[in-house]
Image 1 (cartoon, helix red, strand yellow):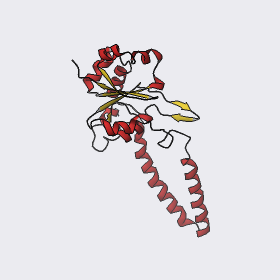
Image 2 (cartoon, helix red, strand yellow):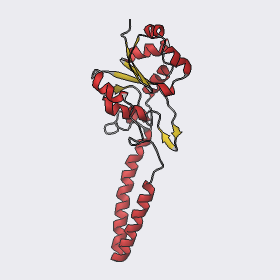
Image 3 (cartoon, one colour):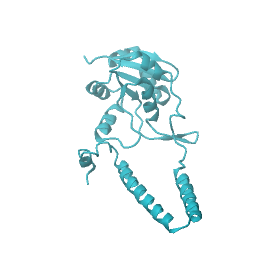
Image 4 (tube, one colour):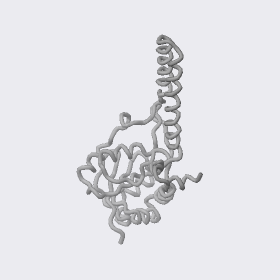
Length: 211
């Protein structure tokens, strides 16, 4: 069945990623497992039933042990995030650049590409155009392909078309030539970017309205 069809079927609208269909199967397996254990307990005495329950509990706990991954506890929220909450208008729309799709491993912990952006958004409470931990919808894939070349003219056209009002630059992830370009006042004027905030890790620009 085409995944796009599920997006218009009532009750399936929240299944943005095809992989989330496993949640329905997991729910069914949980019911079947509960009924199975209940039937088994009826066939054994209380001591055997207790041991069986303990064994099932140990198996469940061992399955729940996850490999280290990035979480809110492992993400250091940069100062710019609460600053944006206090400063930016409520209707601001942000692009976190660069838009990275592939994850990486830092200090033995797998870091999701957009996890920091999403955790930062919890603090500043503004809309962001990039923030997907798993499946990216086709329309967002097209947007990413356009914005990945920021600050090219094509990317700036997308910025204005989408309605992005602010661009937050992660300085540790941008190449040197882009860093020099974003530090050139003449280039910033040409792009219609106005610097609002700068620290050791991030630069925040507001986007001037398209002329």
